[in-house]
Image (cartoon, rainbow, N blue to C red; front, side):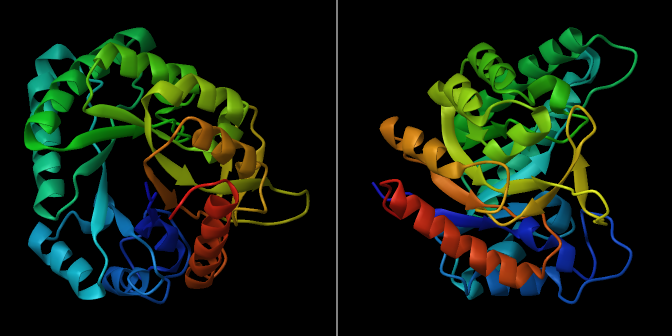
Length: 297
């Protein structure tokens, strides 16, 4: 079994002229189309695209961009809030189904969903129940279309209370109870949740079918960084290259190898260095890491 090494277009966010997800003071130097062209030049098995960059584009246009670049679209990433009251559920489910259809239209059978955002005025457990009910229906639809719905242990603050920790992700997957809904393991997110990444892996292991590779380092006193994210205690971290951060990825991949992990490895970068150079370096580091831990890419 060969495990693909893929890369996200989100890695390039800090250098985009427009359509940025991360707010920045000055525009970058390249377009989203140039991102696809570049990612096709760095010898990866596929690309993971984020809907926020491409929501105004026809899927056929995106598929052509990827085809011209010589790289397949493996995964499409989108937000779709299913943590809504039952009276709003059908609308949210329908919106998610359209995004699954959109993913398939560009050739992506893996659909990463960020499935809910915490709202004031409702109990967290109540919102979580609504989200799981919506996910169950969407997973059933994905399966009927030949797609797989994926969610990760996410460090994004409005989603953390639902599924930031490994045990939360595991329990959601158990309750959705569908072979068409699986988990993305993101050990970098463990930094912000202040959870041991091996514990997180052990908790999520039965449902992991995809992995994101990124890393973070604590912000040192006296240094100024614009792109940071705080952990649960308020300590700031910044994105760094895979071998420069707080998470030691080697034992985690070795454990995954023992578990006969057969999914993709997706390079993600959230730092402020020149993104093209950072992506090249991270892909090289990812290939070395995968080889060192016994995988074939």
